[in-house]
Length: 269
Image (cartoon, rainbow, N blue to C red; front, side, top):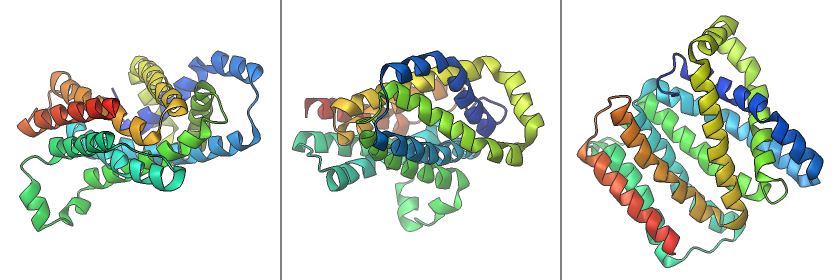
């Protein structure tokens, strides 16, 4: 839905605004039922700032490249970094079988993106950084790794559903001046008029999806959760082909199979 929107950056901001209104009753109930411990508010502020960067980089990567190319690249950088950060910063332990699964997930992601391009990339790796879609996708991956580790710590102090609501509210509020400056009020109104339904649906889907991830982070290692959620890449390839009519190459099919195998090994590990 983001890829098919008129203005991807404005759409990404509006879906956060939709989350604020749609899930306000839930947030009020959770705030009344369970107060937030002092460190929790610092984690909420931090994740809001990181997610502000994430949404800007993600929407810009979609603006410059195909969903089925940009999305795997953005998602691949995060899982490659998260286990390293999880072990180094959080003292997590990763089993040998799960480590192999993580490698497969990352390998499958880049296989789906770079099938048939390996030789050209090896000859001129700096060419990747000249492509704006790839550049923003890599920056997106860096923010994914950052918020994954940060949120692993944050949900130890805040209910995952409330944490999700507060980060959406914080990111949307922080991005508001930028959106007005960059796009103008008329463009923001136009996007809302053209895509109100998709904005609402995307807001619900995004909220539920990451709230589930946050819940998983409460009971499992970020080194496992972050790579496992990348099974969504398989669906992005299918949806890119069926709905957006983007090409499905041999590499994207092979990469999806490898990702599924990697997630299976992580589960066993």
